[in-house]
Length: 292
Length: 259
Image (cartoon, rainbow over all chains, first blue to last red; front, top):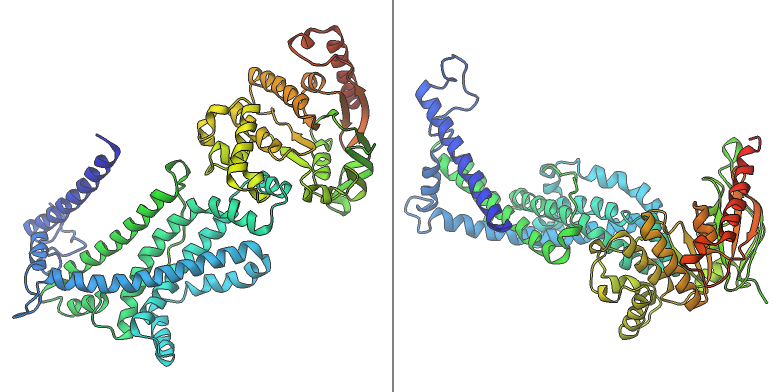
């Protein structure tokens, strides 16, 4: 069995075991009346169909019309919303990553800029995007930016940070002797950057780009709400959340589709990584993950 | 004739106040074209510092270093040095050939020419078959040979080597020493070689400079009058053992000095 089939099988295995755990927990709660077996200790999550719909009910809801008398099934509606959100997220990802990469280069070139700006870069990520999004939307509206662009800006705001941090770290990763070597060839600063530092930074950059991909999806979903966009996943999730008590499976289904969009995006980045960074050079990097 | 390297009363102090460390004190040294000079001494004697002053990786606190009659800075800009460190320091995203040709690429030489020169250099270090390998596919000794080929690719007049064979096993080390001597003869490069090994210094050099630590000073200069070219027999030469003893005694004298 080669590496690829093994990883696909183990992925499917994990999905299957999670499904078994979900249904087993549900079955246990239903049997005992909501307590751990042979005790009176209550289970942390209620197991009725409203709190935890059966997985097949969630799956089934994807193939039924979302609204009574509606034409499209839920899956089509969610995929359409997912595609809409994905496009804003990609826009934000590209802009944010480019900005973060540029910031990393600026910081490695100028310690004055790093010392002066880094606190604000860090502080920017402690402002909850829920608070910031309306402000950006109002400013964007004043500037006459289309709503989708406003959403992309919010996505970029979350995406740039991990890229900036890891770019800086990667640009600093070459050994002192490698830097001295280029110095002994009388390499210019830009040759140092493009022939040594940037190639050395690539293994650090891609883990950050994967984080930026998921962060930009979150940014786009959250950003759609104040921007008043009704066609994306953000509005869909909010809508199904408000009808949670009558149709919980639809909210779970929309969460599943959102996750799917995120996984696909990260997968795309991984695909690019595979062609750019050989396996022998890939490093695992722990980067800070911004909270939406 | 101008010396290839000349140091006139060069001193180097790291830090200041009570934390100041005198790494080099009043160093005078002249190296003539084509010489092979080894610097030997205990850790902290400033031999690497001296190499770094000459290579313009650091500036001395006092004194005048000159390289080919110029300041080290100008000599570096003129690409008068090739450097080899203890670690091969190959760029792992580049093939062996691309690593060897890196200095040429930085000089702006176009691809066909730098590939041709790179291949010739790989022949010189007997790695012809490995042009498109990646560094991680090579053994430590082969990696160091690539790093020597890279240092020679732009035909610098001086090779600055900082314990280049320090991380290699004894057998590889002896083979590399033979190869370095062959390359030195073929290219007529001036070599400044930092080492911890007495036998290595004597076997390779035309002159051995013995240094003492705290502060780093030159305590002895020993001319190595072993016949050229050196080879397998050199290590069994009576004079080889005498010279080794000479260097060892110079180093012992440092230890006996009151600190």
